[in-house]
Amino acid sequence: MKTRPRFPSGPLGGGAAAPSVLIADPDVATRSVLRIVLERTGYRTRAAVTAAEALALLNDRPDALVTELVFPDRRGLELVQAARQADPATIVIVLSEISNDLAVIEALRAGAHDYVRKPFSPDELVARLERHGSRD
Image (cartoon, rainbow, N blue to C red; front, side):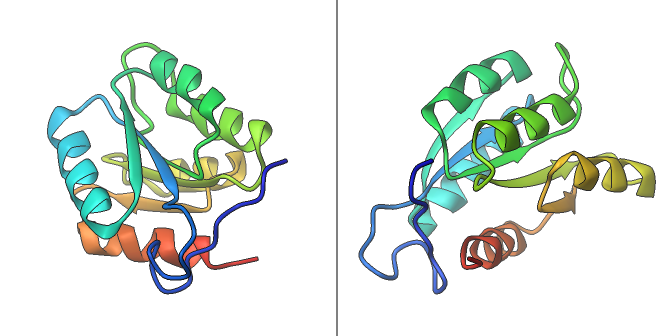
C-alpha cells in the first residue's frame, strides 16, 4: 500500500506532492467547477464522465475520489466500494443530488467517508477533503 500524503493545513502545506483527486460525475458543470476549485487549492485532478471510466482511472490510485451516485452506465456505489477495496486509505466523498437519508446511509456503509448534497459549496467540499486527509 502506498504512503498517503497528509494535508492538515491544505494540500500545499508540508511540501509534499499535491494529493490527487479523481472526480467522477456525469455533469459537465459539476466536473468543471470541482476541477477549477480543487486545482486552485493545490490538488491534482483527473475527471471521469462515466462510472466505467472512473473505475479504470482508479488503477492510478488517486488519494481521493469525489463521486456522484447516479451514472448512466452503473451505480456510483460500485465506485465507492472499488476505491476502498483498491486502497483503503483512499478518501471517498459522495457528492450527489440524491438527498434522502437512505442514500446517505448506503454510501457511508459502502465505505464513503462523507456525503455532500448538491447543490454544494465548493469551499465546504475542500474543507471536508482536508479534514479527512488530515486524519491518520
